[in-house]
Image (cartoon, helix red, strand yellow):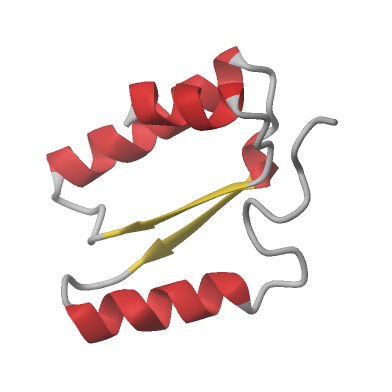
Length: 83
């Protein structure tokens, strides 16, 4: 996820989000989240610019998590592109 996050950052995004499975006891999910955080840190983007929604795996659960992210006052990836 670090490489993917670096690409998103190169495109100019500074407000990011991820939907993840349970982090506790899940080394793969934890490592993916760590990769996102490392890429953001290396780019000088504050950790506060990352929204994380933890959910169980499933189509409906993922959809609900996306709805939760998009209902934020500033949805991720909205209008944060460098001009």
